[in-house]
Amino acid sequence: MEGNKVKDKDEIILGAGEVYITEFTGDAIPEDTEIEKEESNVGHCSGGFSVNYKPTKYDVVNQYDKVVKSFITKEEITAKTGILTWNLKNMMMLSTAELKEEKEKKKRTLTFTGKGKSLKTVLFRFVHVKENGKKLRFTMIGQGGSGFALEFSSKELTIDAEISAISKLDGFLASFEEELTEEEVAALAKSSS
Image (tube, rainbow, N blue to C red; front, side, top):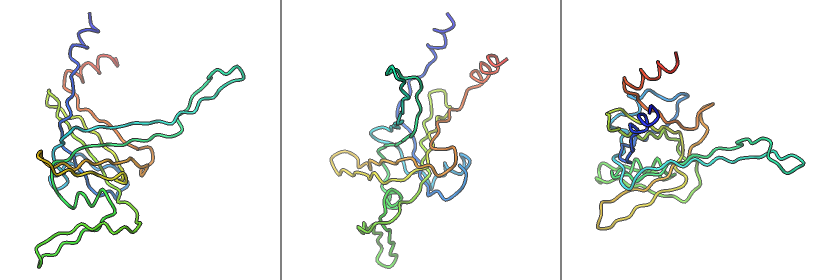
């Protein structure tokens, strides 16, 4: 049966991947090679990666108390991950903290001032390499206003971060992009003809 043949090929995706964060000031999503640079790589995930999509639904109800139409009036997307790499610059992008680097004193200080200021807007990218070698990418423009958590314990240190999507570009909140194999491209071409 053709349906079972396709179903047998479905891949179980595991949560390993790389996380890239850069400050976003542009008016378009950059090319993959611009986003996925080594200096933007904040490290491997630990404890998984999750995306939460929460729409706000409005139902139009008629006089018989039946729903006749529904609309999505608001969409919220958050990404959560545990990041293994310790870097105060990355933590600064997830907060309103100020980073001070003092070469002569040989130190770097991240200070939480307690003063209200606007959050930095970041481009967030998660890249997972599938079993077939093709990449699955999640891209979002957001802010880290939900905070982060650190736990110094007997296991490796992770920075558990949460970033919330913001509507910075018209018609874009977040996206999933999946690279296709030649076989999948051929199947698409066959089904569209």
